[in-house]
Length: 299
Ligand SMILES: C[S@@+](CC[C@H](N)C(=O)[O-])C[C@H]1O[C@@H](n2cnc3c(N)ncnc32)[C@H](O)[C@@H]1O
Image (cartoon, rainbow, N blue to C red):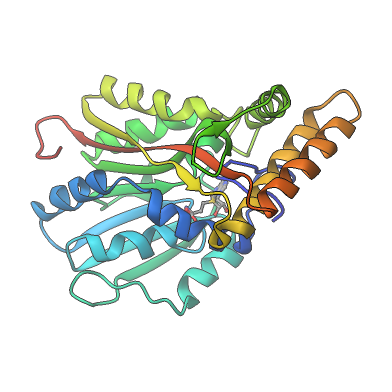
């Protein structure tokens, strides 16, 4: 791809994600995730019978499994579902072999197919349903179908790194910096997030709240936490990720702009220069969620 996202910055082709972008974000994702919710998921799994079967929806190259496997009880069986065969193939071939906490490689079944329309059979046999950086792409109807399928199977959900709509710039002390032009670009970007990403009209940053409400209505106990990326000014480790984010924001805003876009290109050039010079860092807001059916153990 093309776009950068799970949905931040995702712009050109709404449903394709390139492995470079997924690779760039993996380290930032690992640092950002809420450890308490990950532990709660591990504790919840541990009171059930092994093997522990998990389904990862929109798995991409398998970064969710690589992160979670060492935290969760073993033995694990993963079902990775994604429509992009090129990404799934890399999940199989990745040299950074994911290990569970006793050092064994989890078993992984790769399922290459679209998640839309939602098919509850994908969840059969699973204890825990996980997804990361997916939620902003989906529609309200799709979320309702997911929740109904999980509730019918008494499954827990760990849905991480869902964008909350907040993003912007940080000064060298880590304080937010914002101009009217930043706000104008962000508004265009948000309008872009509501387009169809293959699931119907996308919920974008409204998705985390919508998921919480649907789960609570269906008898779940829901815990959420913030899991932002903070990419400090002048920290070279995040330079490429920051540049990709800026490009994605620019391209999404250009698609929605009715004024020819020169002001967006100028904005991008200035922000790019400030980030490259170490005068600005970036932040992107996310939410993590862990939910268990009421009456079952969990946080
Ligand atoms: C932002 S990426 C996140 C990938 C992975 N979960 C991660 O955290 O690195 C979104 C993923 O959803 C997949 N995806 C998007 N639309 C899909 C659909 N309709 N059916 C199946 N997978 C889809 C993409 O191929 C991509 O791998």
